[in-house]
Image 1 (tube, rainbow, N blue to C red):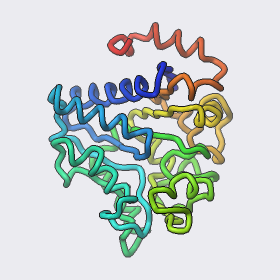
Image 2 (cartoon, one colour):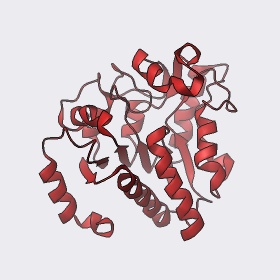
Image 3 (cartoon, rainbow, N blue to C red):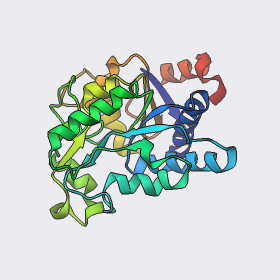
Image 4 (cartoon, rainbow, N blue to C red):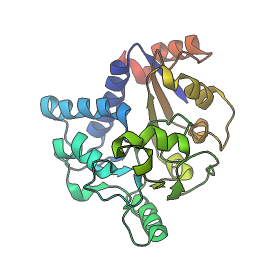
Length: 261
């Protein structure tokens, strides 16, 4: 696991978007895993800018999102399909047929989950998986006690997640209670992961995820097992980490990061 600390949230998002852009330019047929949430909005805004100003080409890219709410139609402003269309898909030259999210309106959710796994597998797996982290330490909607070998499945949401995400639905009473999510095992099979977290409210959980023991109570700790995972944070989110001097030294001396310093 690599830890990269940037001075501001915008700088952290810029670095994350630049890594994604470099991967797309290096492999125009990239299979890209995507995440949602407020933290990701800056990343997508920068990618849209790179598409418009630097001709970043999404024409042959295939995307798989981590998750989607159960029982929420794609046209609903709270759905993740709606989010992705608004923040990225509708603003770059990606084919809609190449953008995949779980279908939370499927009549047979277990079959939909198995088919989602098959779609990923049939495209050779995810080359680069973008991740955020919830305040309970979940990646995707892998809430506490998610098995570290879990696959795409339906998952009940915790009260903390419901409270955190409910503004998009007008309050907790209107918030969905279930979601389809890639499993922890599915995420760990991606060729590379990059997790972005910013803000002081993420500092405690980032420290647990990066420097704490691996536990199913915090699914993000499983990323310690991934052979090529980068965690990008701003100074605020890094404030509880104990080894910041070491992380900064590695970034400054690692050849893979020469283009980003």
